[in-house]
Structures are given as C-alpha cells and as structure tokens.
Length: 121
Image 1 (cartoon, rainbow, N blue to C red):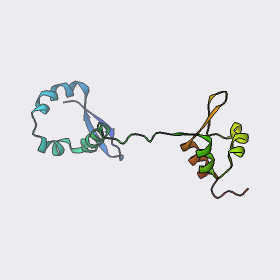
Image 2: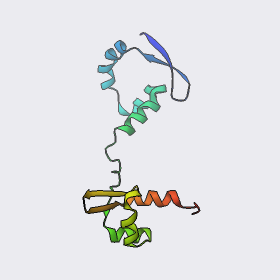
Image 3: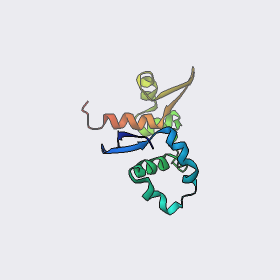
Image 4: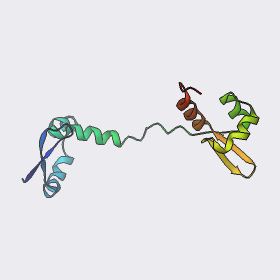
C-alpha cells in the first residue's frame, strides 16, 4: 500500500493512503462492525468525528429578522416616531419597501444599539 505523509489538524504527522488504495479498502470497510470503527480509524478519528458533525441535520435554524412598523421601532429605540421618520435616511436598519412604506429591521436595531452602548455623545 502506498502512503503519503501529511500533517493532521493539530500538527501531528500522519500517514494517509493514496486515493487508488482507498478504492481497494471500500468493500472490506463496509463489513467492519460499528463498535470497531473508532480504533481502526486511529489518526483519522478526529476527522471522522468532524465529518459526522458536519452531516448533522438538526442544526438550529438561523433566527429570522422581523421588520417593525414605526411605532414598534420607535418604542424599541426609546425615541419618538417623528425623530425616527426624520432620521430614517441615515439609519442603517431602515428598510424602504416602497416610496412611502418604511420598516425597521429588529436585528439591525439591536446591532445598532449594541454598537452605541458605552459611547459618549
């Protein structure tokens, strides 16, 4: 069997089989008892665990953003609706749906507030 040397995730030197050799190993590997796989993987164990983690389908869905109307956005910001209308053009969380239809990103407002916390005027 031809082997190539490479560095593992943590810098350790590991021997890896050539691609041609992997084809020869496929049928016997399919018959290996599941309880014996971790010990047979040896240095490949970390990779197997990481590949398994990538294959999970139960990842949490990213939280969706909500578009707020003027009253809700003003309340969340602690400002008047008038102030929010006047400053909408320069606020990064403003979403213009149509010429006279503004909405405000809830996540954008939260990020904007977080970026301003602790800053002086």
